[in-house]
Image 1 (cartoon, rainbow, N blue to C red):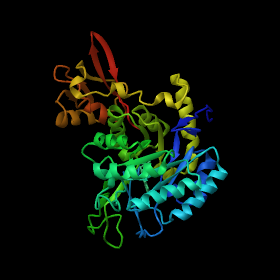
Image 2: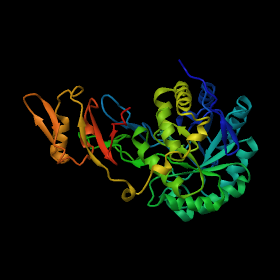
Image 3: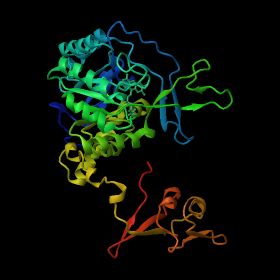
Image 4: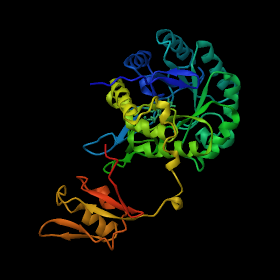
Length: 413
Ligand SMILES: Cc1cc2nc3c(=O)[nH]c(=O)nc-3n(C[C@H](O)[C@H](O)[C@H](O)COP(=O)(O)O)c2cc1C
């Protein structure tokens, strides 16, 4: 049964009925698809990145490749997609239609230009069409146009600051988000530069440049387009840890609004992104994988979570985990060792092998009983055995101020 709860709040002055937005990508690249997504219950859409009419878009197919396991085929998804083949005129028409059909949803569009005139003209046209928010793609893995050629725009602090100023100048009071890349040496420097420009926030972040794989029989990169391939933008579950770090690092250092983006597949992923500083969460690969209907699971899961935690609004989650993120040297150092529940143990020996060859040789193996036991003198509590145990029979026992605490495995989906 789906749980109902008022999940609405304001984001940059825009009403959101819940924190879940469809990100710029295939799910928002056709008008009928955007309509269906919004009808299904997503709070808003960011229409796939568009540009001025003169910019050609030469798409190559097949453009997707994934990697994973037999049980989980799409752990990470790679694409060599570009911006939308629909140019600004068509996108403005869609914005007007969507605003008319869904006056209380957030209708946003993503833009990419090269020259100042292009960026500003894109903004002016969208404003005229009634756009709620403009997102600027400074981080397409296939590279940017104009400033910082051969790179993603957001990989150059100077170019980022310059172009963001052009956009904000044209946008005036229409909210602007700059979509950045985690692939920089110092994300804080980029966020600080954006804060100086007066833009309203950042989208953190985007697909991560990657090479998804190589076919070892043919030596063709994946995806292979008639034998050759290009680097992909990687998305989906595999990138969530990068996204979390990017958001946290910005939130800990810069006062700027963040829209979370990258790797969210569930309501609890969204909570994680919000807990480290995102004000809402954009999804692309997950609805591409399971369809727009997953919004019901997201809203219901979030409603249940808020109730359980005593939070009144999704906004109450924002930044809640930040005070727990510290420098490694500032963490406490309790006495810790591994604690194995033999009632749960299936005798596979995985913990023993992992500890023998990758831990501290602190797990002793009884090969007759097929049972592990822990040499607490030797065990520093690194936690490797807990990660590999297939039945979660291992937890870390921590002694802090003569009190025992248990740290259990968290992280499997
Ligand atoms: C096939 C594909 C096309 C995409 N096209 C765009 C785009 O045009 N503009 C953009 O800003 N992001 C684009 N993205 C990136 C997504 O908006 C999003 O940032 C990324 O997929 C990470 O989120 P996810 O892990 O939830 O998918 C695209 C993603 C995919 C998979």
